[in-house]
Structure formats: C-alpha cells, structure tokens
Image 1 (cartoon, one colour):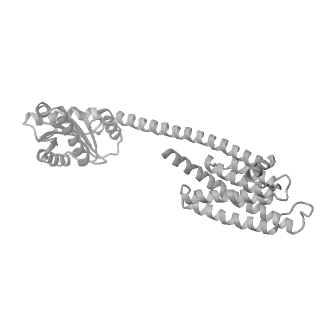
Image 2: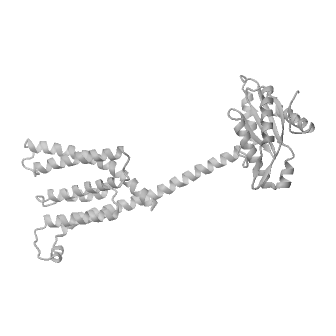
Image 3: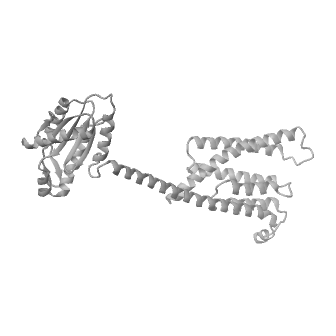
Length: 365
C-alpha cells in the first residue's frame, strides 16, 4: 500500500510536468492554426470550427495554470491533482472524438488515444475507464449504424472505431508496466545505496570511535593530537588522563553490565564537560584521556578538580543499584607529540594513585 502510494505520487509528479508543457504547446499550436485558418491560408484544407478552436485554447490555458499551481504547491500526490489530470485526459479524448466527425481517417482520435497512452503514466484501472468511455463516445458519435438493441449496437461497431482506443490502452499498459518495473528497481537501488552509506558511516565510526562509550578510540585520538601539535603556531596545550579508582570492585560487586553502564555514563559527563575544541577518548579499560588545546596546566588543574568533585558526588544508577565512584587525574603539558607528553601524564596519574587516589596531580617534569 505504501509502495503504491509512492508510485502514484511519483507518476503524478511526472504527469503534471508533462501536462503543463503539453497544455501550453497545444495552446500555441492551436493559436497558430487559428490565425492561419482565419487569414485563409488553409482554404483547401480541413478547417475546424472557430468555436472549437477557441474552446481548445481557453481550456488548455486554464489547465496549464492549474498544473502550474499544483506544481508550485507541491500537491502532485493529492486527490485534487489526480482528478484534474483525469479531467484533462478525458477532455482531450472527447474533443478528439468530436474533431474526428468530419475526418474519415480519424487522425485526431488516433493521435490522442495513442499519444495519451505513450506520453503519460496512466494506472491500468484509470486507463481502462478512460478508453472505455472514449470508445462509447466514439461509437455513438462516429458510428452511423442505428441499432434497436445494445447488443446489436456493440456488435455492429466498425473495427476502425475500436482500434484507436484499444491500441491506446495497450500502449498505456506497456508504459505503466515498464514504469512500475523501473520504479521498483530504482527504489531497490536507492535502498541499497542508503544501506551502503549507513554501513560505510558505521564502519567509519567504528574506525575512530570506541564502541562502548562513543568517544574517540586511542588510535584516532593520537592522530588528532599529533596533527595538532605538528603545527607550529599553537599556544600552550595540556593532556590529562582520567582513571576510575577501584573499578574492578564495581565489576566484581555489581557485575560487568553495571561497570559498562558506569563507563558510558562517565563518558557522557566527560564529553559534555570537555566540549569542542577539546578532544576526549577512551584509552582502554577504565582510563580516559582528554586533550585541551590552548589551555595551561594550571587551568587544566582547575577544570580537573571541578570534574573530580562532580564525579565523587554523582550517583551512577544501574537498575536498583546506586554506584559511587571516584577518579584520579594525571596532567602534563602537551608539546612536540603525543608520544612525548603521554608518559608524563601517565606518571602523574601513577603518582595520584600512590598518594591515595581521588586527586589531581600535575607533572613537574
């Protein structure tokens, strides 16, 4: 049902665009024909009634404006748009019947019936109704047989009257079938492309992010820090390592799912606390690392102290359990490269743990 709705809307959008162009093309052609016939240049050829030509011009101008309005309102998929399209189709088919009265070859009827089927995307049910109504109209108007019964009237209709409608309906079925097939194929292609894009995005995210916490992974973090430090025009920067104290106790006492929940919750706090242009990552296990560009070690200490106090006071929830944790911080000035400053921050973190944990230590090396 959803596919059919999308299919009809897409077909309607295509039809509206084509009908808009066709209505103005017919208007221009009819105006030219009208003036040529008016000045007598078509004296020896078939000239249709001026009233019919004026009606065709006015009708196509009105429908052209309607199609323009529908297009600008982006209402191609509404019932109003479907009704207007059907009305335009039927108007031209009935006019082609009337204009074929004095034409023994019924050229206009042939062109209208087959042209409608080839140029426009007409659903089979709508096409069947249109061409049946056109056949009835052409049988009444163009057939000279006066039969007393409906059965005799149908059986005595000349073959050349039913051929235009039959071929037009057949053409519309072929065009609609091909359009439906191509639309389905395009839809499947779009779905596959979207899935491929999503998969590539997911793989790219896995290449740079820690799967559990959503922070950068160590490899990508190191690359970003080194790229930043390689530039020579940066001011002082700082790197700090955060380690959860006695995290093994959390896993042993509450279970590893609880430990994972604590890691995710703490990661969210770190990410919120150290926003762009700061960089944060999970080193592994219960260790996190943050890079603070254009930040002195003194300012980093102040920031870390505030975060440490917040972590200590923050209750982490897992199911019915309330878990309290503390964290130790090691800070070092970030210069030269990650490989140069990381050991200093790690030594400061080790000292923080040696001094009793739940504290911030700045490297003095």
